[in-house]
Image 1 (spheres, rainbow, N blue to C red):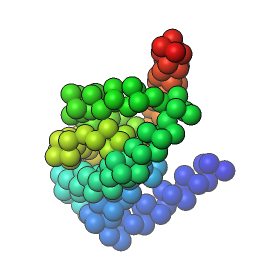
Image 2: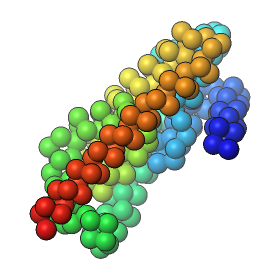
Image 3: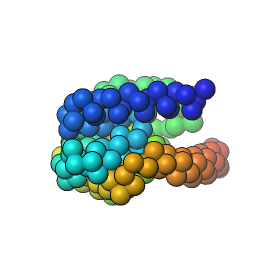
Image 4: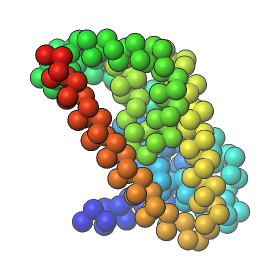
Amino acid sequence: MLEKLITLIAVWIMGVISSMGYAGIVLLMAIESACIPLPSEIIMPFAGFLVFKGELVLWIVAVAGALGCVLGSIPAYYLGMYGGRPLVEKYGKYILISHKDLNMADDWFAKHGDIIIFIARLLPAVRTFIAFPAGVARMNMPKFIAYTFVGSLIWCFILAYVGMKFGENWVMLKAYFHQFHYIIALLGAVFVAWYLRRHFQQN
């Protein structure tokens, strides 16, 4: 069932890019960065395949993808700031998030937000949702936009380049990218275990 859904999404993505070109890349990557799990691991390699065919230009593809990431991240950021933060402040205790945890997140993003956003934009799955917690922590907006663009530009260029090199076999990349999702899921589970242990030790 999941495989069929991914196939349908892939077909839709290919249709959007084929018909809209660079604007389609901007649109799809904006959706992906607005906390909607549309796989950039399909979007950008297919765009790279079109570079292979001579229909698109690699550096423009990468810039279009990064621009889309910025555009999609801005509403997700403000949703975190004006919607997510009040909810966390009011109901966070029910999901083991204290005001102390929230203040610590504020400090992290204030001191290290640039590197947090930059690295997050290079990680599968994490990159889709990082704008929301950045908004909750009220990270400096110009820095947020700058590092979102730079990190996304690198990510988009790499995926498009690999898709270009694989040519007609670009679809084979999906199997490799799934392995990265498993690794991220494992790291996420380790982080949750660490957080729960820390939380209960302090209480």
